[in-house]
Length: 284
Image (cartoon, rainbow, N blue to C red; front, side):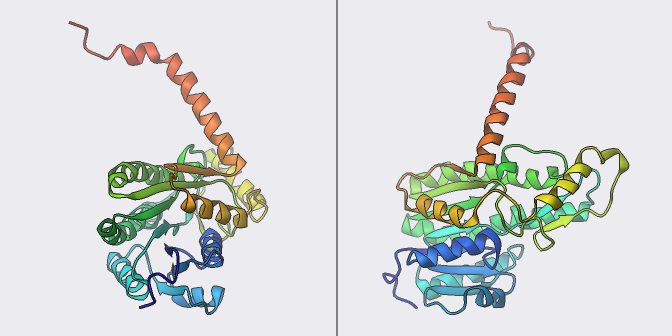
């Protein structure tokens, strides 16, 4: 086992061989921290990062609960602890809600929601024992506002937000900080084939809504406004903060989505407030 005081922090990052996960791993290593970088194939981690004394590549399919437990055991055997868990593994699904098959939706939830829970449940006992730790759950601007074409993907991020909010309150008394990291569109391979499943079924009635989003996704891919290197540095700042937030939106597009969501919610609530209030029992 590597000496526990050799590194300031030990990170465990799922889906770390590419995209935002790889950028966060690179930033943590450059910061002098150790990283347990997981991917479906540990060889992809070695290919991306090479040899590094603070790096441990671990094969992990997050949908396999027993693999999640073994990955945590390997991390603790190597470094003695996990200080920061980053639940980053996930993928997108593009298509109208009606167009997606039950199998497509099931696979999406198995990774984006149940996989996150598998890894979190495996990691928390050691954090609780030490009364210390950080859990970062990768959400999205889609965790605030859903829309045509990405409705089912956004629904998984809504689930992540709900889990995150509960964990934040459950674990705060135990010295463990929990934050949902909410990126907008960052320039990664997310809209490419490896990270995005596109429903093959197309229904003509949706061509003006989700169909247009399919077209836009192709043109936006690899031209997104967000800088992944800057996101990784923001995550380092988050982990260094003694009072981290429950949610960290990243990117001006996410900030605008949040503003629009709040404004729309306030308008609609005001319009229907009388109806909402009318459903209480009459005062005695």
